[in-house]
Image (cartoon, rainbow, N blue to C red; front, side):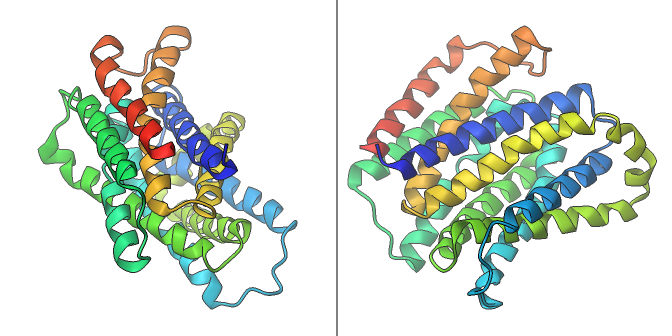
Length: 288
């Protein structure tokens, strides 16, 4: 199997693990979003700097750093919407809504990178998106008037972010790009220390910082896997495969509900079976 295809499949698994882990923390452990986010930023800076020590930086120019830096800014903004929406809703339906973003990636990649995949690949992406939407329709209690803007922002931000990732890895080593992105995102989160709420609840969050570190391992793996996949596959394929995250999220949420602690309001698997089958069929079409 193509190694880049493996990276593309591992990425949504890592993202789903990150999302479910974050949801558990927000529901059960976290006291304040901003103090939690600040600690995440510090951890991100640390692992980015450690990774940077093993890389060659001599051949890089300032212009090479622009796109990875933009991705870091987008990830920071995206995290704001992500945390605020995740506080209110279940993981699987929300990721289903977010994962309409491949349409943006496909459009941008076609226009600017002249990227074309097989006709059955496009059909596969379409089937996967239908599956994710069907899962999202179970989000019965979402207040679209209150959260539609947040959800739309997430869809656009993720789409633009992944397109720029593809542009970045066309010009710079994957790991150099990853480090720059992580440093920019971490530094922006570090400035949250100037918020009163961050300082007020920081000592409480520091007591569980070892658990936050574990969560950030999923984040490290998820973002690095996207970068690695983008270095060897069309952006349309990578973003299309990413919709399988919804399937992973459904299964992981169910496991957490059953064995650790309830974090979802809708943990019935049977009504989600058809959408999950559609996502799997779409993945097969996209991968062949």
